[in-house]
Amino acid sequence: MKLALAIAISTLLASSFAFTEPYLAVREGLKCSACHGNMTGGGKRTRMGTGYGAQDLPWKPLDLQDQKLPHYFSFFNDVISFGGDFRVAHQSTFSKGDLVSDSFQTEKSDLYLQADLVPSHVRLYIDEMVAPGGAQTREIFGMFRGLPGRTWIKAGKFLLPYGLRLEDDRAFIREITGFNFNNPDSGIEIGLEPGAFSFVGSITNGTASISDSNTSKQLTGTAGYIADCFRVGGSASYNDSGIETRKTGGIWAGLRVRKLVLLGETDWIHDESNSGKTPQLLTYAEADYEIAKGWNLKFVYEYFDPNRNISENERDRIVIGIEPILTSFVHLQLFYRLNQSIPQNITQNADELSFRLHIYF
Image (cartoon, rainbow, N blue to C red; front, side, top):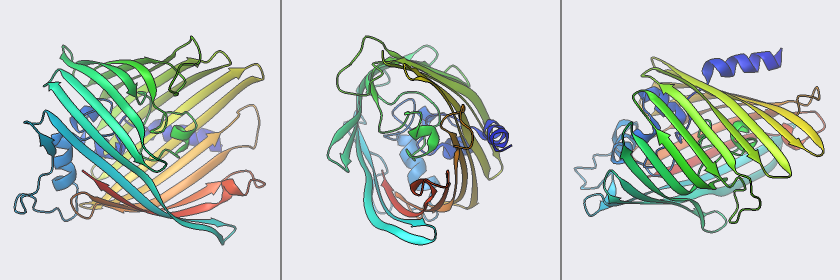
């Protein structure tokens, strides 16, 4: 019953791939490329994206013009532009009602640099994570765009075009599938956005490491229809490492009803190796409600079956919280995460309370 309910909820609520905060894309009826320099979303914001984040989203936006402050940072008539995201959090963990950890942590510090060498056609893009753990390049690629059908060609190191591009890399659909901000790969991507449709496909090494360790390649793609108040589509990936083969498929859709946004995703994973076959199932469902300008209530349900051949080994979790965007460039989040797993796994049953400060530009 729980499995059927999880699939039904996720199929109904699933949403657009590729937006760092996907509910905003659904709320505004926009594609990722409207607000992000990376056509598949996440990372540096466009002039429209920064203006939206600085003036339209906040509860009490700053009068940047009066203070002679820019909302978009660029040089040479926007040929060179940059941006960033900084996230610091305080997290407490509770097991059986007892406090077991309490710590501050710098979650992410990312700087973005974009050079439109030939405006509207040739772009160099860099996404550099500077903390925690030292500098690491998440994305660096060259992109040729402006072709018929809003077609682009991307080559270099980039995040793969699969599923919801959630900010939370710990969500089951991002952590277990491997399609998250910590797992870019090198290769080539081709995408096009004719009208309300969006199609993106990539061929990459499939190793997410500096050097390729096998002669096989990973194939990843997503396709969808994005309308003003709803969207629907699917994603798929195939990766043969020589030792193990992973096939992944997912469906997503999204719906806006007045101030309520419903979104989510269901994924099936089939791993096959010399040790056997492991079918997995993951679902994600989210509801967001704007109680006032800049104040978002969030409810999330997640489900993960690590091996559908084994019964009574499922995990699920519920996340509830509020995230105000108080003023320009300042985003706060207060969330409580309730985890449920097999009784003998104490760690996976521990609940978490987190407070996060996000500064963006």
